[in-house]
Length: 472
Image (cartoon, rainbow, N blue to C red):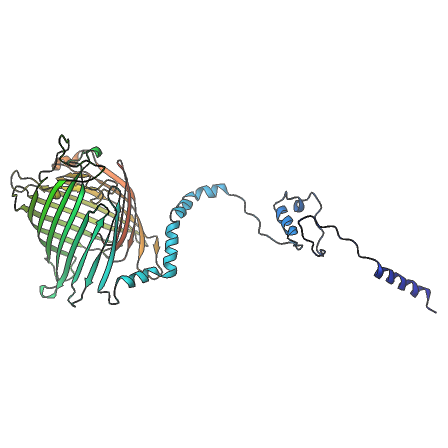
């Protein structure tokens, strides 16, 4: 007979096995039912973990809604440092402004576009090249073009460039240049060029340092220039040498065409036209240039001096009274400040032009000019014209980006220009000096300038110039 104690234990086990499981709480609407949690009990109501009043309350509620019962570790949220963000505003602005450039650089690096473009524009030997050109500046029209460069095709070190640029207003420039070094002349170089230019809205403000923006007029100029130069006073690759120049120029000036600016020569105009206006003149040119070049590289220069002194006589052929004697000199110094191409550049120049034959007249193209292309990048082109001027230029250069295995580099610059013009040398000491300041970015190789953007500020506004490719 079974003992009473064993019978009682068996009945207890049978009762526990036959009893139903405890009922689970009904799920909330929209929350899927999940398996019973074997983890820690949920936090009581009113605590930081369930109320959402704490930093992780919302995260815990989201985990429960997703059916996650195991606590998930999250990195603590960083506190807001307002002072740090205020100090980082310039960095945010730079990132925003250069974000399109960063995207373009990323695409170029990913697909190696610079190699593909170079392979497309030149042959394997590098003797035939196509160089695209693009030009834009405020106040002028947009222009596109290019040049064909043929190098050493005959094996004599010759180089021939033929190209041009055409603007939207149908102004255009065509140019051909031939350059060669002759071993029979002890390595002296010879260069010849022919250029034709049509400019229907050449800027003209009159003569003098005190011309006003409202004096702006336009001139139609058509010019043909031929120039040949031979290196003298040097042999081989000397830093100091001279150039003898012979040339011919033919120029026609007429009233300009521009829908927003009045032409020169209108009846009652208060701005007097130049002496050779509304006629065609022809001139013979003879010049001598002395140059010293100790720069380490032609582009992206780190140290050295470039000094030049020149004298040129332009004598009228059809009208002998239109002649000019031009004298000038300029010195540019490159001083390295820090590594990575951080260089201070200083430039000083003086130039003057005078009638060589008594009371003759100086042709318009021979006058000294200051403007966006001639030393004052915050002013319009050809802004100031007269017979003499000094000029100063002080940019600071340093690189910001370089391709992984390419010599191409982007180099920004900070610059400041100052200068004035006058009818005589005594006018140069008067207090009115024109100045500007700005920034620029140049795309450079060691031996060439590929592209350049300059943004200059002056009292007459902001000037922007962009050039891609070889400037023609």
